[in-house]
Amino acid sequence: KWSAIGNGIIALGGILLSGWIVPLIFGTQYADAIPCFRILMLSYFFSSTFRTPSANILYTQRKVRVILTITLLSGVVNCILDVVLILHLRSIGAAIATLLVHIITSAMSFGYLCHYLKGATE
Image (cartoon, rainbow, N blue to C red; front, side, top):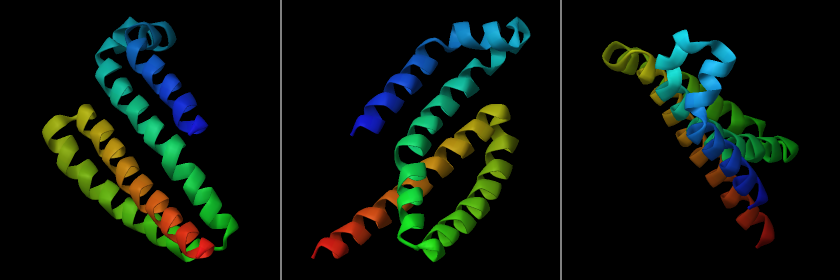
């Protein structure tokens, strides 16, 4: 819960302040990257709130095969989405592909963790 709140504040801040952050850090010539930055901040939220913590907990429970399966699947899905979305949407497509992969892998790892913990408490 606290992780979601903290990461939500960071992501929302990044999204809302992206028009200021991108030119300040990278220069005004990269202002066209602001939409990508916003999408990647949303991706950060899903990854840091759900995917990374649940994967780390699953590693501590020696569920390496599950994490390996999710990792391999995410690699394949990422490659496919990159090719398809970059061809149609260019850099925005790459950002959307990353967001979709983070949402999918977050759902898989967090879902499996919930399933595993439910079984461990019964």
